[in-house]
Amino acid sequence: MNFGKVAVLMGGRSAEREISLKSGNAVLAALKRKGVDAHAFDPAVEEISDLKQYDNAFIALHGRYGEDGTMQGALELMGIPYTGSGVLASSLSIDKWRTKLIWQASGIPIAKYELLHADSDFDAVAKRLGLPIFVKPSCEGSSIGISKVARSEDLKAAFELAFKYDSLVIAESFVEGMEVQFPILGETVLPSIRIETPHEFYDYDAKYFAEDTRYICPGLSDKEESILHELILKSFRVLGCSGWARVDLIIGKNGPVFLEMNTVPGMTDHSLVPMSARQSGIDFDDLVLRILEKTHVG
Image (cartoon, rainbow, N blue to C red; front, side, top):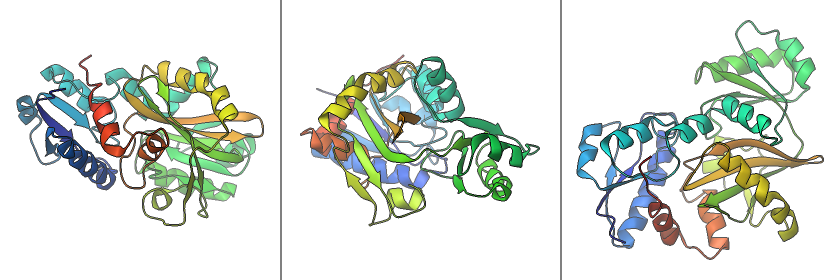
């Protein structure tokens, strides 16, 4: 396909800027190896209006102002086809609370949770949810601002940390089980990745820098994966997602518990979508090209 001049959007102004630059540069190199006329574009230092010179956009921006529907809306206004989910799906998926509301209404299993506020009765929250509890900013990724809280007296400090990143903060019950992630490419569920880390949880360092994090792909048996496929696609479809994504879940003693949907997953050397794609016989360069082939407006 002739994609014309392609902007690889990377960097940006979110707390995930560093990881976005890693993802974007990996994507850019892959596209160039495939002969695509691709160029880096960092909206934190370049004018958005300069995107009008491009024919397509590959979004490798993580977090706010890139994964949350804002960039998707700007590209739609300019009529530039882009990768991944549209405005509404991007806005919903980055918001863990609203994702949970939609999943819960659609019969997709989620963990018990509550919204936290500065005047919350933290002891009462701990009693209702049980300990340990994960405290998260609703609209941040890469485990930024997340705490695993084992004592009710530490809940307030965890809330204050998360609140630095987002005014909407979630307390979520800890679910014992295997942490498993499923990439989705188009309408195809790729092989699962099971994550094992000696860290307290799969935090920012474990995701991007630690050498002792273990990734098992496929993470589940063929039978276990096939049982989950329809539910995973449903979690993708009810949010209105398209193109590609990655859904994170815990497989506990009572079955799967869905955590969040990532509409612009990482594409670094530690990232899971490329790892899963390789298991399916798709190398990194071909994966990037397949994602680019699904660009759209609206």
